[in-house]
Image (cartoon, rainbow, N blue to C red; front, side, top):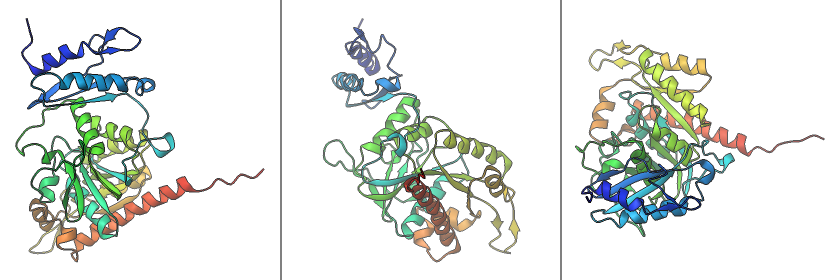
Length: 360
């Protein structure tokens, strides 16, 4: 009996895609991940050992072509996935055309203000004279459309590439531009990997000094994909001062170290609260925990950002304080944090470029 669902029909088509040297198809060999389909758009991955990634590229192409030929399929995206070491300039990691540095902004858990920090950090880089792009890699909870007050959908460039959206002088790409705001992203790992890969490689970013990547919370597929696909210049960890948040921030920090991504430093967000009426200070989540953790782990402490009504209101309205109120203490603070992070990037770059002196 013929299969009715698009996913079943795609599987049937993939049974005709054989792997050279085996006389077996990709389905029989167990190379196909779970197929994800949404409105006719199909995503899946093919498992490959690191040494066979290049040789399996024709198979990936054939699988993508086969999937596209299935009635009801609007588009198909197939990626090769393999466990491998982090991509770095030293190991020949692939960069993004025109982008000099990529900085990930990450947190061990949600709710610590990571996305707000990422936006204002990007604008801080820009205020300090850099050309900047923002990639919203938080697939499950994209925030950039709201934080940067962007509506609409990206336009197509030549071929299949997309043009990034723009706001406040930043080039921006987010899954939030491609799906409805209320649509839940019920995606498994391969789908997330495919989406991030597309936003990295199928977008005309142009020439950027730095791309800031707003990572999803945690230490899962998205973080590993970024470390594998792009030579990251470093990661900024965002945490609140409380012990519970610091435990998770510590996990994120160690994850980046394990994949050889430099940790540029820790930002303590919601560091303290100043009452707008009386001016008294309250350490709602404690205070100084992130600074102490940075000192304990031997990484830079980039600064502390208060829990303040202005930051929250401006962020919800898509009016980041760095550009809408550049003379404010909060804007200056974000610019200082950006400058501190950039010094770490430049310091690491100088160390990598330093000549070796050999005395014989």
